[in-house]
Length: 193
Image (cartoon, rainbow, N blue to C red):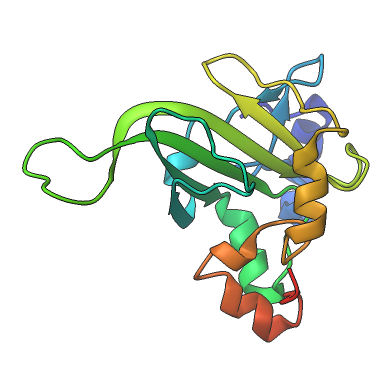
């Protein structure tokens, strides 16, 4: 952990006074990090985060997806934001959600029916809440490799869809079985979406 030089000078005084909170702390796991050009550095440990849901072949359009394979989506949220959500029913600034798309299969090992997810990752969609950085509070990023992800332009249809249909602050909590009852109880859930 890097500590600012002035913090090192003040640390003995602060410790003596019992003010340890002023010593810099590492960024919470899951906090969004960016390149100097504003691209999102995709969190490497997102699979260790809080799991919210899975979906199989979900499509929000009346049009066929056009894919020649099954898709399994897994949604994770950084643990610090999940702790806040469990208390308030709202996502705090700094929330990072990752939707991991994996290729699904019906044939493998002893499987005779149903769909399972494979190790082949299709993409990552990252949804970040930061009211100081993004108009509308949220931004989307898509990552298909190991490089940082560029933000999706605010004119993309995903923004309008999430704003119109997201049950809690433009997020699809209606599909998160552990989050939905929390939001309903907190009064932050919009059942019309």
